[in-house]
Length: 87
Image (cartoon, rainbow, N blue to C red; front, side, top):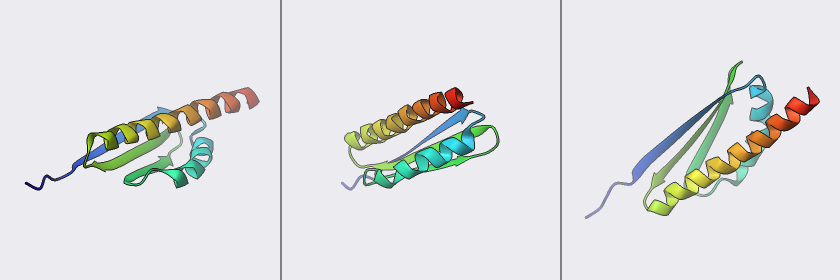
């Protein structure tokens, strides 16, 4: 029996006046994304969007996606604190 992998897509939307700066700050980190996972980042005037996708052929792949997104959110939180301090 050949099972089709589960396709997972997680979208995160963050409302912030620093969306452009945050996109630039975290896009550099996307170079080191684990194999089989894709991360897209874009923004508009009010929001930063992060989309994580993977084909989960095994349960641990879903955990890897979650951990990757968690790392990105930690980086965003730190960057927001810096931007708010400089403001």
